[in-house]
Structure formats: structure tokens, C-alpha cells
Image 1 (tube, rainbow, N blue to C red):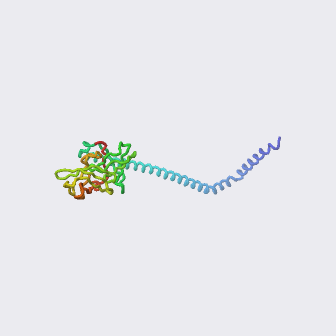
Image 2 (image 1 turned 135 degrees about the vertical axis):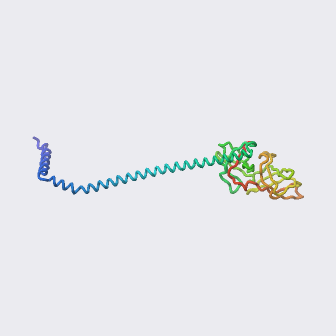
Image 3 (image 1 turned 45 degrees about the vertical axis):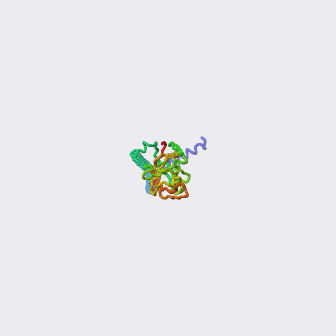
Length: 264
């Protein structure tokens, strides 16, 4: 027999005899004692493991609640947006009903628009209608009270510039209404919500407070839109025409909802 190959078998046999002998001699009690001594340590590790497991479970639950809360907040924002949209639609419908009562739709083809910005300089505003809505440069802009604001200037995809009648680049024909007659003249913007009139014959018996309306003579605006009132004028024997100031109606109005005249 090869001694090298027999060594492992001899070692295993010796180990078996040692354990068998220890068991017979009561070493099992030693093992029991070792177990009793090590049990608290094992229990402590077990409890620690349970706490860690419980803590991880709580963390996962907190993360789940956070995620759910974020989803609920998102839903809440969407609902608020829908409520606001419904209110805006209701407001637009109310405005359209007012227009129908005033008969504006019988005279013009209109588009409803809202002011999104009012410039502090330059006498212009921005509205939320643009090229995508069929808005074109030069279209007149009015309020539901038939007050002339101005005309569409530069047009963008989703919004447009409205040049007010007080802008220095605007000139248009007007009619000054008196008790028994009306007289034609020319109005021009002077900036800072000021409008000046000229070329009214000096023999015209106008006075402060006379209403000024648009005339279709020049073709820029429909006839009969409210412009303002005569606030002052100057008569001179050396001049063949009267000149004066018009106080526009629109500075007293809330620039909220207005109308673009697409066709007149």
C-alpha cells in the first residue's frame, strides 16, 4: 500500500475517533456551554439584522410615499390648470355674448384677443394672437365698446404687436361730432397716449368735449369707431385750419380683452 495515499484516510480516522471519544466523555456538555455563551451574541446580531431590515423597509415606504405625493401634486396642478382654462373660456363666452348684444358681429368679422404686455414707452401693446391665428398686419383693433385702439403692427407666430393710435407713426381720418353737423379732419399720434388733430376748417364751431370718431375716408379704419373727445384747440386768424388735442378713450379702459377686425 502506498503510504502517501493512506495519509488522508488516517487523518480522517483519527479525527473521527477524537470526536467520538469527546462525545462519550461528555464533551457534548462543552458544546452546549459554548452554544449558551454564544446565543446572546447571535441574538443581538439577529435583532440588529431585524432592525436594519425594518429600517430599510421604512425607507422604502417613505420613498414610495414621496413618489405618490409627487404624483398627486402633479395631478392637482393639472386640475388647477383645467379649472383656470374653463374660467377663461367662460369669460370669453361672456365677452362674446356682450359683443353679440352690441351687434358688433353684424358689422365686422372679429377675432377675440387678450393683452399679454403693455409697453411703458412707444404706445403699443402685445396680444396673444398671431400668424398662426390668421392675423395680418394693418388689421384694426377695438374694444367691445367700439373704442378704436389702433392697428396690428408686426406679426409673429403666436402673438402680435398692436400700434396704438397715439403712436407717433399713426395718422388717420376722423370726424368731430357737433350738435347739428360733423366736420372732417386728420388725427395723428403724438406719443404718451396723446393724439392731435389738424386740418379742420377754422370756421367750424367745435368746442371742448366734442366726440371724435373714425372716418373711412382714408380707408385705414372702419367708420364710426370711438376715438376720444376734444380736450383743447387753437383758432388763429392767420391759419386756415384749427389744431388741437384729442383725449383718447382707451387710457381709461382696462386693456384686458379686445377684438381684431379681420374684415370690414
